[in-house]
Image 1 (cartoon, one colour):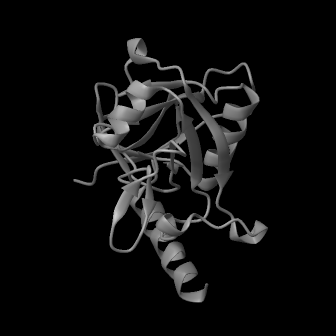
Image 2 (cartoon, rainbow, N blue to C red):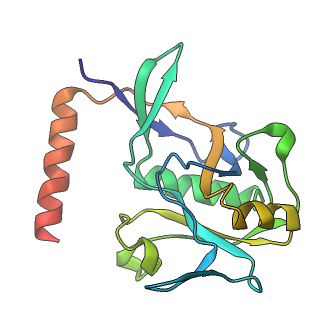
Length: 195
């Protein structure tokens, strides 16, 4: 039996609750990519104690994320590139750049972290991903946070938090049928060959 896939969506209405409202620092990001908190060198990795910046992907388009719930059972969710763009814009419009917690725990909200950079990779606009993430597809949302909070910086240095995980409410779209999934895979394959 194939596990269903659901696209998660939001709308542009600022007052609608479907949105990303927090970014969590987690030990195992669902997008399977850690953030960078170091000076990245080919042979050696060092903490950059002076900069205190963590940077990396927040959301990756079409990345399948496994979920289990009472309502949907075993399933995967994903976000399209247009939906990720909507999410990033709404996040900024609502001023959520300081909304950070640890491990998605509501009582673990932390001060002293601010998202100061946010961009979506888009080759058509000349916006490339950072070198360490150049394998990620167009439409990936990246963010950089300045970490003034010494306790959080200690968690980063100790490797107890390694990546970002967005947190919010989303609308489930109808799952793609097997034929639709195969057609999408074929389109993606053809696009990779001719790009």
